[in-house]
Image (cartoon, rainbow, N blue to C red; front, side, top):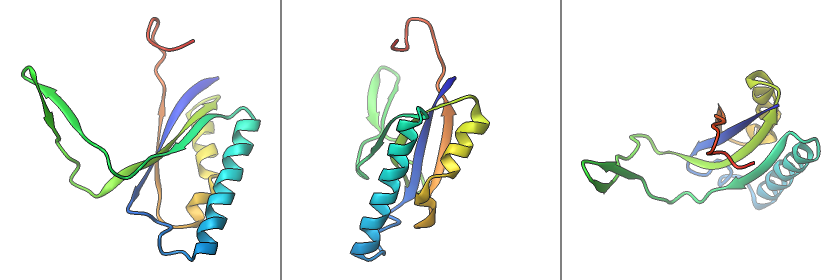
Length: 120
């Protein structure tokens, strides 16, 4: 099995235009999906992220703010997945019910295992 980090990307808050009832239903169905994936051993962790944050760069011996992305897209959360391969990780991502409510993009990246760096 391999591990993958899935970044949930969006512009703004796709569920903001939903009614309060629809927002609650969205949270419940995504939460159910996450719990099912954890129970099946396909997900280690999942967390939403706040929309605000910082971008930090280091060059020439000093830190600077930025550079900032040109788009308004942000990483809204992440999933830590367990899958046989990238194809299975993509299928796990496609099953996420959040796609039913607004525009979302997901970036799925294999976690590179390096001796002496990764936690056991």
